[in-house]
Image 1 (cartoon, rainbow, N blue to C red):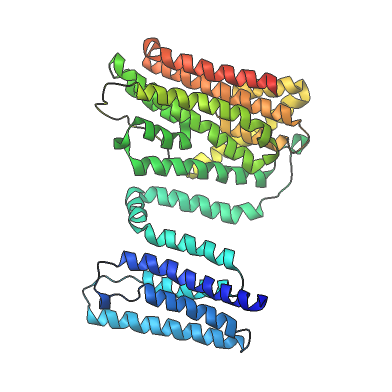
Image 2: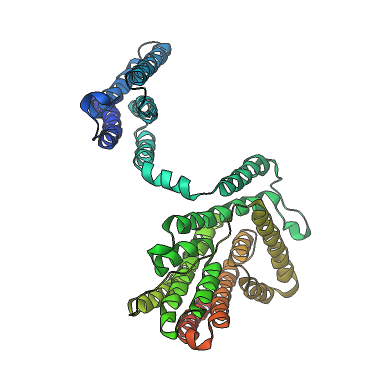
Length: 422
């Protein structure tokens, strides 16, 4: 009885995959006439069931028979496509549906062989890609050729260079690990690129707060400078919305730090998430409160200036900075103990919080007490938060910065109190 139930569930999973992809394809082509579509929900469901049946038959028959069925299905799809092209030569035909049919057959076979979770997971990804056609095409229009070239160069160097780099320590105290450093460069570049693309995709017409959120993923410091320069040109009463934007962008920094720590050394994330969460809530709470209290409408939106993080030179510069911070962290630890790490954390936070966060997370794996690494990371984010307040005050003036100074002081005090609780 159990074997029969397993057999039924396997075929139902295969049929479900066909239904899922068929529903998306049917909805996508709902405006076309019935005879104009290559395949709809019924065809996809049947192909899914076909894949499931032949997955079961392949256990009885020779495996080559399954390959012949797949080739037969491919030939049928090609014939259908050629016929459609001949009937309507002026119609712009793609092959997305045809490829989706072959993928449906393959995934349903995979599911029928017992790998339900894997097959359904890939199905969800496939359905998402199929349904996101307008969004993906819009992104392609936004992304410039130079950005694509920069991304390709970084990916090529990462894929080719990363496996060749030695995964061991060099230099004093075996601090410099080329493989790990370049892997972190790829990680940080990827996180920054998400924010870079989002801010280009969303644009400046969606409001300062939403722009600050997306920009904060790439560089909250860059967002601060851009908003400060824009606030300088506005009347005094208009400065509150830009302070709100800076606080919201700064709150994203705490999320970014948490992601970096979770990837490098999740063992220290459990105690670290408490101060990060407290500082995040204070920062974003202040930003949203100021935003809600902003009564005058924005006459124009700020221009957030961000550099492409996938540029090779930018990646190399961060790699050098990370290597230097690693070396300095080990040196300060050896020469001055924990106090040396805290001093370096404060100084590093004045420039960049990513490098010191990655360095301390790595050191916590190699003998440095977790409490020291956590304290250093908190000091760095406090330092970086204070720098943003200083930059805004410098560009916009003290009178426009009073509320920001109050909220930044609150966030910093929360961080300091958490240091004593660790």
